[in-house]
Amino acid sequence: MKTIDNALYIGDVPVRQIARAYGTPTYVYDEQRIRANYARVAAAFRTQYPDFHLYYAIKANDNLAVAAIVTGEGAGIDAASVNEILLAKELGLDGERVIFSGNFLSDEDIVLGLESGVIFNLDDASLFPRVMRFGKPDLICFRVNPGYGKSNVGDFVTNAGPNAKFGVHPDQVLDAYRMAREAGIRRFGVHMMPGSCVTDAEYFPFVVGLLMDIVGKVGATLGIDFEFIDIGGGLGIPYRPGEAPLDLEGAARKSVEVFRSKLGEYGLKPPRLVMEPARAIVGDAGWIVGTVHSIKRGYSTIIGTDVSFNVLVRPALYDAYHGIYVDGKEHGPRARLGLCGQLCENTDFWVRDRELPADIAEGDIVVVENAGAYGYAMSFRYNGRLRPAEVLVNGASHELIRAREGFEDMTRGVRIPARLRK
Ligand code: LLP
Image (tube, rainbow, N blue to C red; front, side):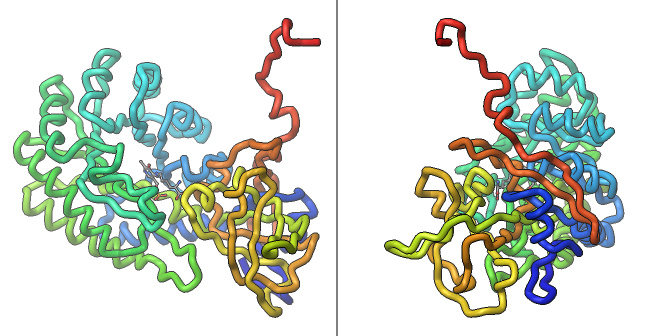
């Protein structure tokens, strides 16, 4: 986002123009920013380890236009469910261009996963015999819980360690691979995803070291050559003002240093190095454009907007911080204010005390930043407040990539039994 004569722009499009053309609240993504983010992540690792590959975790932003930009750059897809596998298919990706990292899978998930021929990334050893009941995948990958995880979003998105529901316990990994090998599996990968949104560069080589010690022992004991080692996502972005960004290049360099040295230590054949980031690619390339509808001056001053927690749940769910800007007013005097959405829930009072333009007024356009990842994807309908529109900006052009929900979405699929009709 940039400011020209006090007006806010996403790409080269004034946010006022977006609000006028599509209404609010509307998610807006900057294609050029997505491409630049992708290129930076890819280059950071590829310059250190040329056999580096990206799988985009589509859960963060499953708009197919957004995902098409990322897969167009060369990424595969990390899918959390069968429906996300189908989204990948819509983009022309299948087979080993898709890794299926679901957890606590149903039999139906397993059957459909097998039919689609994607890489099975099993979240527990107990899944393996269940998969084998339905078919024999060519390649098996286990998601390892390396025993430690971390996140800037409190403990909310710490996905490894003793309190996490994910991954194979470190002491069970060897037996998991042994079971798979004894069942005749010959191709293997390994995966971890220990945390999301980490801006501490040292964390990445640390967890790579934990994983590699586990992988190394499996490889050496069972004589397995892993085709790929997937070190997950987790590359963080700063959300708060003044927060230091991740030293991405440093994280990549140090992670690959540990990776290579552990390959050497355990005598492993160099595999493909895989990552499946999402936030680092789309997080800061998305904004929500909203409107101030009403201002209450009671116990405190509360700015009422249409950016409710059904549109962006992260603050209500994780106490997450998102920067807010007011079109045309960023350079004037500031005051400490509260800001809320329109839901009948007090957690929708999602900013309690924030420096905002003192002259903010009804009708103003607000922009919420860092909404490209886990924004729309986690939105829902509540109180009759519907999911917003999504727009893609590319330079000075803008186009709708998902229509705003309408009333018909509230009744779609709903049946009133005849006996209940008047
Ligand atoms: N791979 C797997 C298996 C994942 O579960 C995730 C995210 C990723 C990759 C991508 O992680 P990233 O690069 O974005 O850190 N809703 C939370 C984040 C949950 C992360 C879930 N897994 C939030 O809004 O902060």
